[in-house]
Amino acid sequence: MQKNWYAVYTKPQCEKKIASLFSKWKLENFCPQNCTKSRGSWKSKMVWEPLFKSYVFVYISEDQITRLKRAEGVVNFLYWLGKPAVINAREIEIIREFSNDYLDIKIQRMEVDIEDAIEIIDEPSYKMEGKFISIKSKTVRVKLPSLGYTLIAEIEKEKTLDRQNSLLDNISTQISHQHFNTA
Image (cartoon, rainbow, N blue to C red; front, side, top):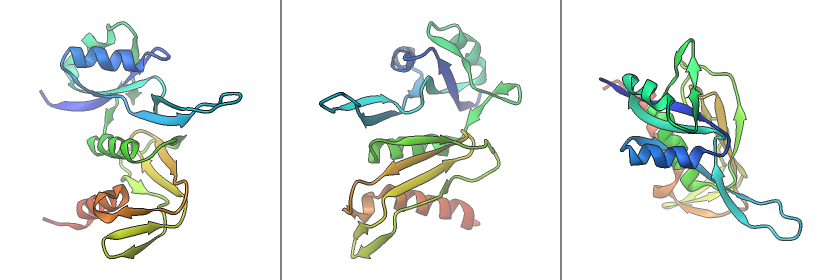
């Protein structure tokens, strides 16, 4: 049976526990982490927490859903039009890359549109010098239509990135290949 990515809704603060349980059951899963500054009274520190509160993504076939619903800590699956919502695999890949490349990511709700394309809404302006990119603006936004979220990351200050390792370059290239190649 065909496998797809699904979003599992968990009890509050059970995301890591559920992801660990799924890993123990040898199910491919993904619980994206976000590094943020804690809001302490006198000292701030970096804290890792789930990017999507109460969600873990799991790659399974539809017939495994009933079993996973019974797992301790699982509330339900995310549903769309009366069926468990299938999450676009490319969106999972982009979330994975985005959470690896940026810190202190914000998420913003938007309208779900499963027919819409993944899109970089705002991207940093940059100046290319050989194989390096010098980033000038401060915000990166990626629209994830099947999830109904936009990921937003701030770039602290102007910095130079190796063009070959740039998430934006990778996403832009892959999006243009998907939409403009006829082969």
